Length: 52
Image 1 (tube, helix red, strand yellow):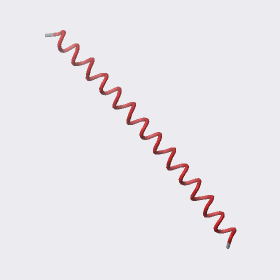
Image 2: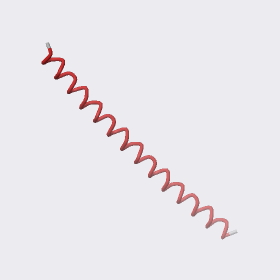
Image 3: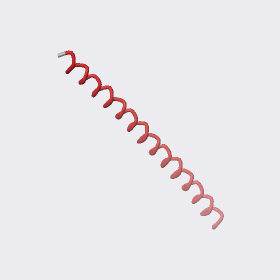
Protein backbone atom coordinates (compact mmCIF):
# COMPACT_ATOMS: atom_id res chain seq x y z
CA UNK A 1 0.00 0.00 0.00
CA UNK A 2 2.74 2.43 0.92
CA UNK A 3 4.46 1.78 -2.41
CA UNK A 4 1.25 2.62 -4.25
CA UNK A 5 0.83 5.79 -2.16
CA UNK A 6 4.41 6.93 -2.85
CA UNK A 7 3.94 6.22 -6.55
CA UNK A 8 0.70 8.18 -6.51
CA UNK A 9 2.39 11.01 -4.62
CA UNK A 10 5.31 11.08 -7.08
CA UNK A 11 2.88 11.17 -10.00
CA UNK A 12 0.84 13.99 -8.44
CA UNK A 13 3.98 15.98 -7.58
CA UNK A 14 5.23 15.59 -11.16
CA UNK A 15 1.78 16.52 -12.49
CA UNK A 16 1.67 19.65 -10.31
CA UNK A 17 5.13 20.69 -11.52
CA UNK A 18 4.04 20.10 -15.11
CA UNK A 19 0.88 22.15 -14.61
CA UNK A 20 2.84 24.97 -12.96
CA UNK A 21 5.34 25.01 -15.82
CA UNK A 22 2.53 25.03 -18.39
CA UNK A 23 0.80 27.88 -16.52
CA UNK A 24 4.00 29.94 -16.48
CA UNK A 25 4.59 29.31 -20.19
CA UNK A 26 1.02 30.26 -21.13
CA UNK A 27 1.10 33.35 -18.93
CA UNK A 28 4.45 34.41 -20.37
CA UNK A 29 3.25 33.88 -23.92
CA UNK A 30 0.05 35.85 -23.30
CA UNK A 31 2.02 38.66 -21.63
CA UNK A 32 4.47 38.83 -24.55
CA UNK A 33 1.64 38.82 -27.10
CA UNK A 34 -0.12 41.62 -25.21
CA UNK A 35 3.05 43.72 -25.08
CA UNK A 36 3.67 43.17 -28.80
CA UNK A 37 0.06 44.01 -29.66
CA UNK A 38 0.20 47.18 -27.54
CA UNK A 39 3.49 48.20 -29.15
CA UNK A 40 2.14 47.62 -32.64
CA UNK A 41 -1.04 49.55 -31.83
CA UNK A 42 1.01 52.49 -30.53
CA UNK A 43 3.20 52.43 -33.64
CA UNK A 44 0.14 52.24 -35.90
CA UNK A 45 -1.46 55.15 -34.07
CA UNK A 46 1.71 57.20 -34.48
CA UNK A 47 1.97 56.50 -38.21
CA UNK A 48 -1.73 57.25 -38.62
CA UNK A 49 -1.29 60.57 -36.80
CA UNK A 50 1.77 61.54 -38.86
CA UNK A 51 -0.03 60.43 -42.02
CA UNK A 52 -2.76 62.94 -41.31
